[in-house]
Image (cartoon, rainbow, N blue to C red):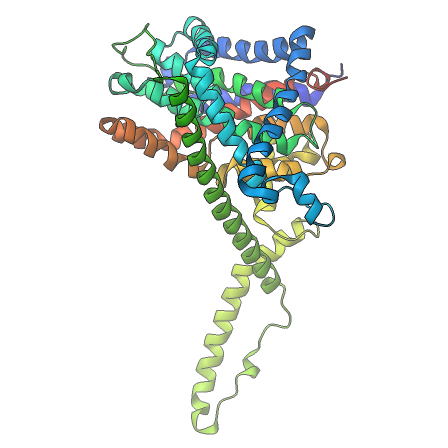
Length: 475
């Protein structure tokens, strides 16, 4: 296994990420050293056990058959409901050429199937036992309460809007720090329902994407707890510290119906957000392209181009001066765009390129080679500014030969979370509906949650970057 400076730099990145969290802490004198070391050890432990133990590694790598089975099952349902539009095989008989799957009718419905299946597995207690097992680990190793540990664990499997429902009776009595843990863990992980979609995106370009993204969510959970307690240290103890709340469905049919209905809501939300996000991305890139072209437009208009009738000649001098001032101001404003076009190396100036420059140092810090940092940073920026859905779509569009396996895996871990501007509204809105009395606290913690959630996924990427890449790919 190869190990070099890129791996060593990722270790430094872990230290610097916690240093940044400490610098932004509400009580810098209360740095939880044991918790941070324990969370880091737990992250490395997840990676080494899941990918380093041959039996577990083989099981994890073979789990991709679950994704294939879910895709086939979903196509059976969508093919019946939507006809050839929902069945890729039937559609191929009508469409000529290699038509891609219709996203809304063939890809998104997987969310409905997974949501219904997850609800039934919870009712049958299988998913409940798994969730409580992880909650026990967090409670024993990280010292957090029963309701908080259950919410953190549930975020790994269920997502940021569903997990708080499990601890609804306890939200009112949770401390500010515990609420922050709940919110950050929601931003640092992704729901199982959408994880399957991201796996389908990445299958053509990444080795074992299901194993990678599952591990990413597992590793991000302890990082979220540690960062939350560094930035908002515990001051008081909540009334509830041991017991885990119960969440029940009335029957298997109730679980199936509720899960499917919830899945449909998620599908509609994803479709709506994608339409808006991709449209805004197109508009932003079009504007940047126009500004870049305008900045290098030649020749610039001159004062001689302004010719007034003789009776108004006395105004010509004034208008010439105004025109010159306006044109020079305009040129000064647009010149940076021409310069950025030059920096882009001949590529069109886009939002992705600019975000790549902004986030490249962060990606370099967690182990991505500098020559790939801008491209990886662009995906991290898109995930933060728009949504992780668009980031995974664009990661899947990067050809296999244009990004190394190591960088692709680090990037996938770093963007594997809900921490983005759009999700802030979703999270705060959902929590406010569940517990309106704590709305002010949710709002106060919103921006810190975005930062901490982003840093948590970056810590997962740094852990991957610190370990040899051979550990994460099939030999």
